[in-house]
Amino acid sequence: MTIRGKFPARTADTLAILSFVIGAVYVLNELWADPNGRYLALNFQDSFTFEWFLTHATELFTKGETPFFSYDVNYPMGVNLMANTSILTLALPLTPVTLWLGAGVTFAIISTLAVAGTAVAWYWVLSRDFGRSRPAAYVGAAFLGFAPAIMSQLAGHPNIAGQGLIPLIVAAVFRMRHPGRTWRQGLVLAGLVLAQAGINEEMLFFTAMALFVFILAYVPWRDLPGYAKVMLPKCGVTLLVAGAVLAYPLYFQFTGPQAYHGLDSGVRSINLDVLGYTTFGRYSIGGDVAEAVRVNRGNASEENGFFGWPLCLVLVAAAIAMWRSRLSRALFVTAFFFVIMSFGDTLRIDAVEHTDWHGPWHWLALLPLFDSVVPTRLGLVVTAVAGVTIALIIDRLIVDRLRPRSTRPPRCRSRPRSSRPTTRGSTPCPHSSAPARPTASRRRPASTRRRHRPAARPAPPTTSRCPSSARAWCPRSRGSSRSPWRSCRWCRPRSRPPSARRCRRSSPTATGAPSCRPTRSSPSCRAAGSTTSS
Image (cartoon, rainbow, N blue to C red; front, top):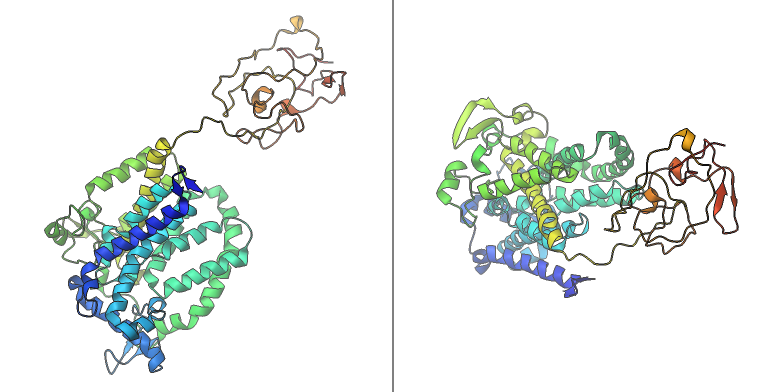
């Protein structure tokens, strides 16, 4: 497979992946200069905490420590590691690197993989599973991997910035809409859920919420029972396998020693300003650090919006321009839902807290699981939807218009439905640009009707009318009549229309064309704009 005949598609994929890795290394170049001697100054407390988690993961093999609890911190009460971000999915495989080179190097590797892995995963899913062109998938993945929210979370939260498994989970859920492979698809999704649970459970919860809202907005309500019939057994397999593996860790997290339920009011009040999406982030090219600090109250690692007003205008204009697309509508509804939710319990407008104005999150903040969510991080879902929308914009509004159109029309797999022309007004075939020939559509008075005379099979006409409408020979079938009732894929009806049925009293003539006696029950026996009854 080649892209416009210039170079293979694998080369394009390799160059895209290499560019993402180089970009991630460039972002963290100062940390890579001395990983064990430097740290991220904007959020050094969380950086030190993650390095301790990486060190504790090595003690599982060297000292036989438990991965769920430790007395090395908060002695003598200890700390519940399952209730914190122990990132076992990343810490355990990188244990040899931690023992050999130190926890600082492992932290730099995880931070680099968080950015590059997120971009590569979205590029793969957008170009393969979602059918977007490679240029569109590349631009969308670049935004999703290096968005202002990801750069902000990278300052001390590599478990949240690393969203490489999120697009794979989304793609696995979308594949479930096809019947079959119940156990296989369920087990694949269960493996992805287990891996993501070992990185960050909060992002897994956000993904489930986003998929729920998107499916309700995308699937027509009349089709929901059919989708549920196909997908629920596969989700049951996922729940069975993942639940069996995570049963004890979750039990220890919520009921073990030093467990807690919900966040304190100070953490739950960390919400996003209403102007947080139209303001430039401090890590953006045109960003203003002072303005970002003022709008976000100085929280450098929680700038989970900050698109800037130009991108907001582009996204709104794209939603209006592509509103007729069901996919675009579902993306817009999902983004709007999480934008409203990210404002938190009480609204904050231009760094001014309005305690009397409550957002929709006010009615969800105290529910189980929802009470452990930091509202501002719901803006990460908006970032993901914005990246997919950018890929959709480039694919439909730019790439499709620049793609050279082939002069050869698409192959028509149709066959003539009937050898006789109909008297109804015909429509042009979508496979040809030639206009259809108008035919008479009015019936003559009964006194002037002529008796029907059978005619021989006509020669293949030169018109480009579609066989399902004009009953003529399709120009792509080359006059073949092996399947006379077959229509092209553009106009194939669900059932054979009455005008395409054979007459009940047909018999072959010398020329091979069927001759029929017109009856009231044979609407296909119309010829030259007249119909008679026997």
